[in-house]
Every structure is written in C-alpha cells, then in structure tokens.
Image (cartoon, rainbow, N blue to C red; front, side, top):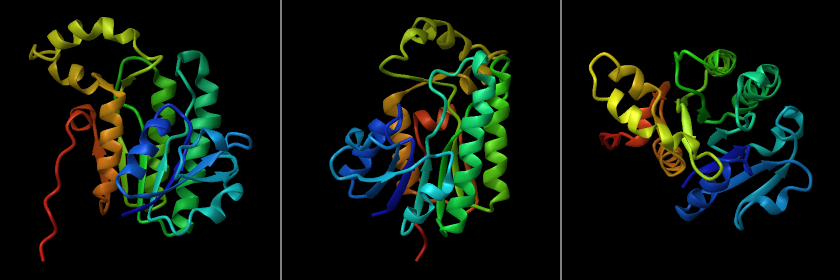
Length: 221
C-alpha cells in the first residue's frame, strides 16, 4: 500500500486514476481548489490549495511516499503557449521542489512524447519540467503520451487507420509508435502500475510502454 499525493486530482486523468488507486488499497490525498472538494471520490482526502502556490499544500504532502503530478492546461493548442509556461511548467517546478522537501520516494509526472513536428511550445514546457525533476534529484517515472483518447477527446479516432498503417511501414514506424494514441484506460493503468512499482533513478514510459506497462521482476532476496 502506498501513500499517494495527487495534484490535478479532479482533472481529466485524476478523476479516473484516484478511484483505481483507492480500489487497490492505496491511501490518497488529492489537491483541489477551494469549493472543488466534492469532485473527489469517497475515500480520497481533500487538500485545499493551489498548485501554483506550493506553500498552500506542502504541509500536507507527508507522509506520502508517492507524488503524482497531473496539473496541466486542458486541451493543449499552440494558442496556449504562455499558459504552458505559467501553469504546466511552473506547477511542475514547484511540485518537484515540494516533493523533495517532503522526502517523497517516487515522483510520477505526465509529460509528452518527444520529439514531434508540432506543438513545440508544449513540448518545450514539458521537457523543462522533466529537467526540473532531474535537478531536484527525485526518483521518478515520467510518462510520455502524445494524445489520450477518452470522453471529450475522441476526434483523433478518425486518424487511427492512418496510424495503424504508418506503424507498419519501416520508414515511419518509429515516429508513428512514439506519437501514437493511447486511451484513458491505458493511461490510468500505466499510472497505477507506476505507483505499484516505484523506481530508483529515472524511468521513461513512452507510448508503447504506456499501452503495455512492462512488469518489473520481483526483488532478489
């Protein structure tokens, strides 16, 4: 059983992840803005605060051994370049420092597939967030999806046949696999897998690993 602290607890990923964690016996605290406590599932302890103000939640991280950072701008697009810096990157930097100060053993962060031919500002912000995690000296799992299919995020299904073909052509296979779609269920499973299998050092999970998380060997006794 892990003690898990989640930012972005009522967001697109958090809403599905937290019930899964609770169902598997983990204890969860979720960071929410004032008035959003009712958005958390029963069994999740609410921490009222602001992801852009670490002082508002740092006191409530302990005794968590796992910190999951899910804060990000909804529906990313090139027009939101400034928000990627002021929300996505800023919150990640604060979270990394706060997790380190709280002696969190495992930090889990959702980044983005890279490199890619589009969304350069978004990728730059997420890459800088990854660097902040490295600079903090945290043990971390970094997930790199490209687009997460789910409720309200279904239009890319129209492109699935194209990706299916590109993943089978030698000249485009690597790029198509790296920038392939994953489902919300696959992301939830990959995040829970990361909680269940903490890592020493840095572990990167790209799209293929998100679709089918690798099973770590049991520790030698």
